[in-house]
Image (cartoon, rainbow, N blue to C red; front, side, top):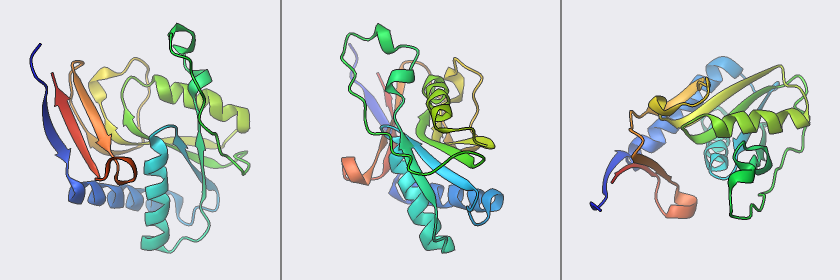
Length: 182
């Protein structure tokens, strides 16, 4: 087996600029966020959702942003195929999404299956007026379902044997995105 190689796609500085750009795009479409909720998809979409919330508050002085997170473990189409026992994370949506514009947030959009599961889970909490998708990284050549992000930090044309890894300051000690090749 050949050793794996890695290449940094987004360093710390570009990572931060990308999040700022995503916030600017959100402001153009959502203004003061009074009718909008941001929901991070567990496990790693919550980091991006929290960063977006922090930046919106600091850059644009938006005070009240509805933010939550959703666990899709039991909504996945491969749920019963896994030999590993699934232990759900916490879903935390302590506000009504009925009639709200919801922005689902995930770190990497790959096959689209996680987002499909998130949409199913989201409907258990009400019927939003609109659902948009934000992804820090869009792996556009690997989609299994016709799902497309409305807000994309960076598009990566990675083949199936390559892996995109998003590292977060909160868990990995540094913000960066790496492309791993085997």
